[in-house]
Amino acid sequence: MRTLQGKPNRVTWNTSAYAGINFTFVYKLDKKEEYRPCSSYILQHGYSAGCLLEVQRDGPLYFSIRNGTQPLLTKNLAISAYLKPRSPGDLSFQWREEAVTVTCSNLGYNDLQYEIQHKTVFDAVWQSAEAETCNVTVDSLDPEKCYFFRARVKALEFAYGSETYPSDWSEVTHQQRGELRDSCWENGLFPKFILIAGMVSFLTVFLLLLSLWKLHRIKKVLMPSVPDPRFSFLGLFESHQGNFQEWIKDTQNVAPLNKMEDGELECTPEDAVVVQPAEAETPKTVGMTSPLYPQMGEEEATGDSGLLPCQPPQGHGVVSLGDFTFVMNDNSYMML
Image (cartoon, rainbow, N blue to C red; front, side, top):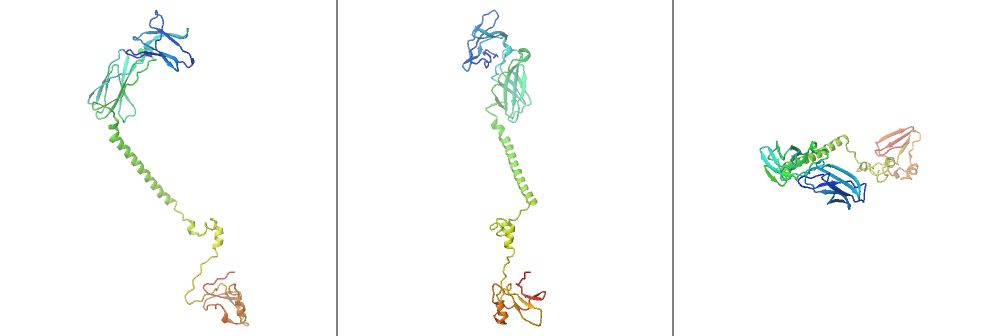
């Protein structure tokens, strides 16, 4: 590979198949000359991997790569076939309305192409303009915008072959309103870019919150809240660990006691049920004993009605079952 305008040629070879071997490079620019050794080797891991040649003109190059005195590769080629131009420098800009002309020093070789690329902070890709001399005009520009510019040189394939390489890109230059600037980011990002990004972020957050609110309302309509059974069935979880059947067994026969009204005698009519036989021949009252009043039956048998703990109230309901009639008050019930 060659660099234009007096830069050294760089010849390299692959050493991966010959690790640990120092190759020697000899060359000549005329077929009748004697080979001369390389004066400046390129080293890789301490071993020779190339040579820098101080060649000032284009033409054939005869060279040989050797391992000691044994030639491994002997070849001749045109130096320009592996040409790599140097990067253009000292770019000048001339603005006129919506166009700019970029100029630089031409390299001293023919069949070269100069490429100028430009873009703004809002462009994703570079846009190119090319010419055969370093005098390239770029149209359709907005002078109020800040632009990036860069340049490079390419050797045309029809003249130098397919083994040539384009030069490296020049340093990026920033231009706005015909003036050189240090950077385009400060003007390009604010206020437009930051304002747009802020509005998009705010709108995104707003839509997200609105969606969550709507989702909550829809969920509330489709799936209404279910009351907590711990407050409706006291003791279901505290005493029975959620076993509803066990809770029913303990609570199905539990009823609150009604308070006695003023003037009523306090008694237990549940246990004091009076049975009157329907036979009129031998009227007598048969009393049922209860756990609370065991002496009730005995007192009725002796006819001492004044010792009863509680007389059945008069004028209440009468229930007949077969030959038996039951007189019951409001607090009485009968189990069959």
